[in-house]
Length: 205
Image (cartoon, rainbow, N blue to C red; front, side, top):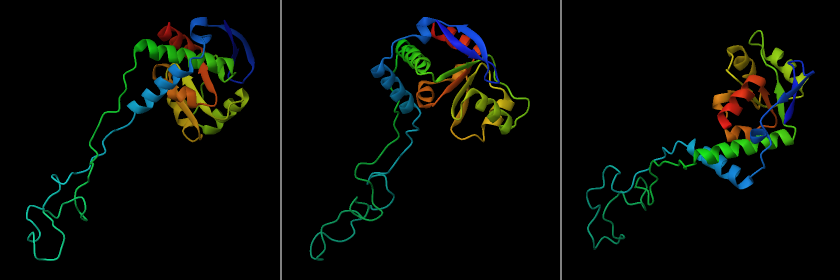
């Protein structure tokens, strides 16, 4: 199949022949949902930690005798019922990682890229560079492509491009090796260079 190719000024630059296997795959919503959920879960730190009554310092002595004081029975001042006591169901560090097979991951990426192409949210350019790390220069190029927010995917990240995009809200820059399903799904439009497309095709073939 062919995708419309543009130059940096947004002018038509012909057609780009791409793999139907990668850019014309059926959209499998359940698979995409599972892979995106797993990706977001793997990004969680899982470092939350609280102390149980046995881990809180102090409380070794019974605060008062069992009977005769008029108070309720108490064995420690570190009970979860007391201020400064332990947590009843204390949170502990945990791993939120979900296993996703390589075949499933690549299948989801093909589905996402194909759906982006079908919805005209995939903008293919021959290359995208800026002469200096100037946000104004990058914005002018994106305006020519009709893109105000989304994701830029390049073969290798250029320092000038990365710095120029830093001040633009809701715009990210990644290389072809670092693109992930959550970023693609959440992007309004995806600007991808010709060389990045070839890298992605090689990876997903």
